[in-house]
Length: 422
Length: 187
Image (cartoon, rainbow over all chains, first blue to last red; front, side, top):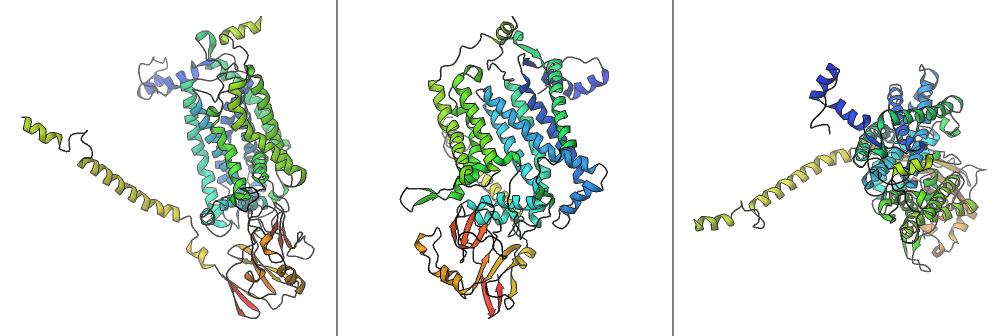
């Protein structure tokens, strides 16, 4: 990074610094002249958008922390004080609260982009895995943040999700006591969640750095899924993509601001404004919208897994649900090896394209079912969708590489772009 | 000269000669480091376990005299709700006559109570830790006249046993002792 021969900068101060610590050379190389495929569409904005949201969350979070008290008797009131008495506290909190949703919107689109255009394939496997790791960290951070207002939804959401660990055989209960620091979700739990909620975003920053580093080694994928063959296929990152990203960020921020100013509680739940009572569970616990598909998978496993017609059970329903939920995320990390096709972009893979649309439909169906009580028709909807979700990764992806007839790839990015222009 | 060479090849400086004294040093140093890191690390891990003051609040005494037959009360024990139900003769009878072998978590009613009329349970659903409803009159008691968990639809019977829904186990029975006929210490 940045060592080796360098060119002088005109500005003497810049040059003086750069001779000693070549940050300007680095920026010039990685964000100035960095060769970027010239055929990006707007799907390629969402990495930069997620980055902007990450910074927004950290900044608003730090300022909220200045007025927040992590104690069971004071947490709820301190959040209300932020909303009513702290200057612009309502704004900071609404940005932070809705920012979590914006983050997941950006990340889910970003992941879909990667899946549609085959960005996870060789040589970008590690880049993809780092991305999955960021998703997991993001989920953990969002979950812990949700407990901090110490509302009914906070406390009971925390109870339900931490109780997942009690499904682990033998050590489950001791592990749960350890996680809680007591015998239920209580003050020690709130304190540690606050500490971790403050820590994890910086861990995310570190992994994002590695994610971008890996990206700058392999270079970006593009909608055609073929590697650039020379300078005619690329553009310098600045000003072409700094400009395109800025435009996309502005459009996204309009939407973000709309949510903050006109519908700040649209994605929230009324029980999030009732203080936590450890003796009364709300009638209907639902997680935030971005967890609903995974929550539906958790609840879709209502059957023990064992030898049929006997009483022998290998995996109880509860453990089965937990394994399925974590498995559904872990499977993403194996995608580079589960997909055996040589062709990256779904543009040239008609069957994969359909299968992927099916996956999106299953994910949305799981999300809707996750918000409903787990019984009757909705249980079947989530079970069928879950079956498709797993089949997509374990059966369809490996099989398509063998049976799919792909469309012919263009000779180069330049050729495809100019042919389109005619 | 050849003699010197022969001594050298069997000495610790020859990298190809199998296990050497240096390997032993590496291994013992690495194991010491691992033991050291582990013993310091344990302090951090164990600091997250329940603290002494949390453990000290581990028992609760309850006066049962004011609870009428058919009534239930909820008391707090270790931050968790404990259900105490003064069961009716009918409830005891129903709990007794169930075919235990057909249950998910087979247990006789007599193994779950110390005195037939007093059923004492940890009021935490064994699925994912919600508090089942059915304590107050008017609340749904599920299909088996016990408790119903609103989170994911588990039904418990009048002995607190799981009968229907996703929960794997019966409602837990805490450790308790009758101090007198009408007072009990939980924990």
